[in-house]
Length: 100
Image 1 (cartoon, rainbow, N blue to C red):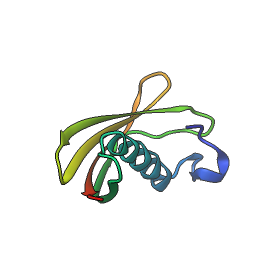
Image 2 (image 1 turned 180 degrees about the vertical axis):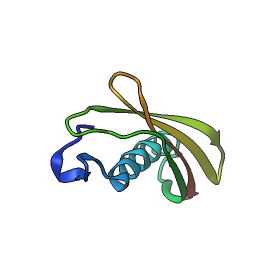
Image 3 (image 1 turned 90 degrees about the vertical axis):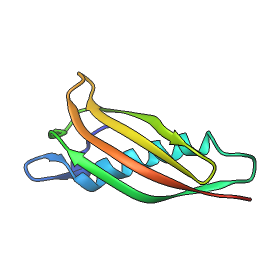
């Protein structure tokens, strides 16, 4: 994810909501990849710890890892770092599995 000016607060760092949306998207994609045919998923809980700033013009890297993949829920941990590996945020989210 590229940190653009229209996503920043002052002083020129990425808004926390944009970081959370990025992490939520990655966790949801992971959950979707683990669903049975016809099932859907929705985020029911999300917690983000902001560790460091993501400055304007930085490129962020996100990695979502499954903590629990069950029949009714999935828990995903997403690390958001700068391209040089500096930790920006850590998100843990729970996805509810909606059976077809």
